[in-house]
Every structure is written in C-alpha cells, then in structure tokens.
Length: 214
Image 1: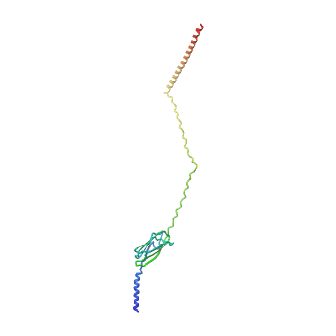
Image 2 (image 1 turned 90 degrees about the vertical axis):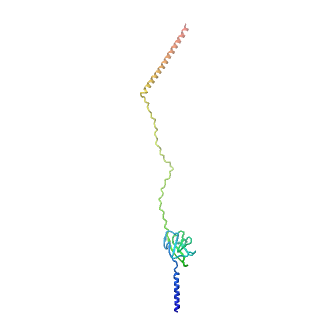
Image 3 (image 1 turned 120 degrees about the horizontal axis):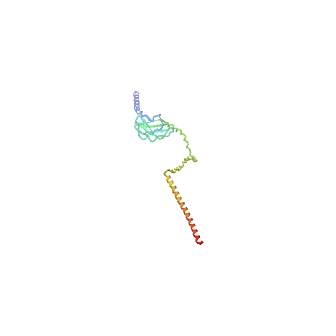
C-alpha cells in the first residue's frame, strides 16, 4: 500500500512540474492608448504589447474595437510583429471605446481579454459676436446743388489819353495855317470869278444896245 501511495505522489508531482511551465502563457503588458485613458479624438491605430512572441498565423489574432453604440471602428486586419499587435482604426467616436482581443501564445495556447478608453471631443468654440455693420448711406435721387463759380469781372479797356505835348503843337498850328490859306485862296478865286462874270455881263449888254439905237 505504501508503494502504491508513493507512486501516486510521484505521478502528481510530475504532473504539477509539467503543468507549471505550460500554464505560463503570454500576457498583455501594455497598450497604446492606455487602458482607462481619456483622449480628445480617436487615434488612427492602437497597439498591444505582450510578454512573449505571438503566433502570426492568419486568423490567430483578432481585435474588435467598438464605440458606445457598438459600431465597429477597426480598419482592416491586425498586424502581428513578434510580441506587438497593431490594429488600424477609422472613423470618429465619442464616449467609451471598448477593445476585445484574442491572440495565440508561442506555445499554441489562445489568450484573450478586453480593456477600454474614453474619447471626449472638445466642445465647439462659439464664434465671437460680430458688430453690426454700419449702414451705408443710400444715394439720393435729388440733384445736389453744384457750387457756381464766382463771376469773373471783365477787364475794361484802359483809355490812354493822347498827350498833346510840345512835339505835336507845331503840326497842329501848321495844319491850321495851311487850312486858313487854302480857305482864303478858294474864297479869293470865288470872289474874283464872280466879279469877272459880272463885268462881262455888263459889257455885253452895253455893246448890244449901241448899234440898234443908231
């Protein structure tokens, strides 16, 4: 009986020794964005870093990212490089973002988990109040008074008096003397001619009477 009990103890110990290393699966060490973080906007991707290298076989890694309404925010399949998983994201979201993940450890055991972060979009900035525009004066239909130019005085001709200086006086006197001489000559001719005609007339009358009377 003691031999049988010893065999069972050794068997159990061997199972525990074998199961111990096998149960040490890869674990999630960090995420970006971090679990519980609050962001202003949804990032373009998220990354998860594990404690050991993961299997990169197709379909071995799955990542689901959803918003508060349950809409998917993933864009394409996740990429696995050694112990890092990268999941592209798309769209915009606000509120709690939930991340569900499943990977396969290097020993072939699947590992899964979840975490969340929050997106709080900043409140829109209200535009500053604008001052009312100053009303523009509308043009009036009434004709505006056009200022008239002051009447320009017409320049008056300046009369320059003729100077009767000493140089002109001899010419004036000479002209008067000449005019008097001409007038006297004309008067003399007229008087002389009148006398001559009178004398001739009287002489003719006397000659015609003498023969007839004889």
